[in-house]
Length: 105
Image (cartoon, rainbow, N blue to C red; front, side, top):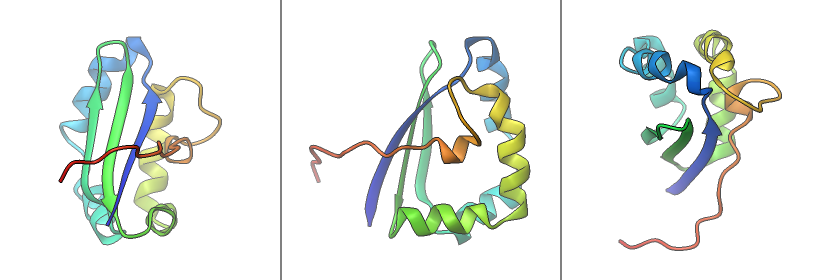
């Protein structure tokens, strides 16, 4: 299983709403993520808007493609895009995995 970590930046004026939206992620979005192979998926948000995402998956590119093929993901990405700074396109297209340099089992 590959561990994937990525960073994005939420607009400071949208932090409260971003947090609220993630307290009620659509059930069909959650189902799509699971079916696409996203495991142990977490988002961590700092008060300045730094968003750290973490997930585990067998194949990150395949998992992203599987999500991109779903209608629910298109709707979710369209709704989430205005929350982010410095994106060219959809938020899921802005996820650039960080290099893992250490891991303790």
